Image 1 (spheres, rainbow, N blue to C red):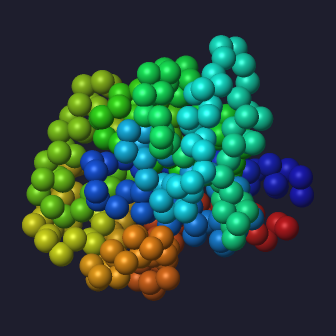
Image 2 (spheres, rainbow, N blue to C red):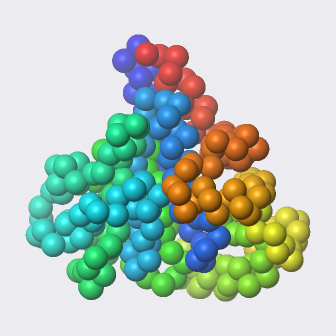
Length: 267
């Protein structure tokens, strides 16, 4: 039984980076992926907000009045010091989902970004991946090179989230070309199309061919009124049946649900 548990832990241990241009639903999806797994499993699920200049996970998790985890860490940074306990103590926990842990971005002191070097970013992700079973990282496109590059290089899977708008596709293609030029491993990049926009210009097939990425899944359109009300009022979109099913299918494609089901049977 112990050997089986170790095998399941190794299978479930993943770092998933969600990457895209702004305003396509990336943070919304990150929260809903994390909530889905935390609600239906005993796994420890982590959410790291590395969209440091424009963080927003704290809004979705009702943490506006809390001190930023990353601000606290960067203020306390010392070379050659383990931040395992510090990160553990400064995780924000959801009272309804105690196995969901969140580390928020630079909410009040964005100037602290100057203290985030390559070593600091790698240490934060490494320590967090030891604290949780599955870590979701919300990152920006190329606005911040260090947290973006470190997250994308460290991740086991990168989910490229786009809507169907022409400008989104063109900008995403441009940033992908920049990553190619920096020798980023694109083979682990997978495409998710979020159909919440009612101003679709590109079809799924056209988006897939333009970006040259395998399509992992499509998030079906929730009516704009429902979508806006849910995101503004922080209500998880997984209450909508088609949305919830698409989230589950994507988790299955990432082999997260398979690992989850095995783990649940063991205990």
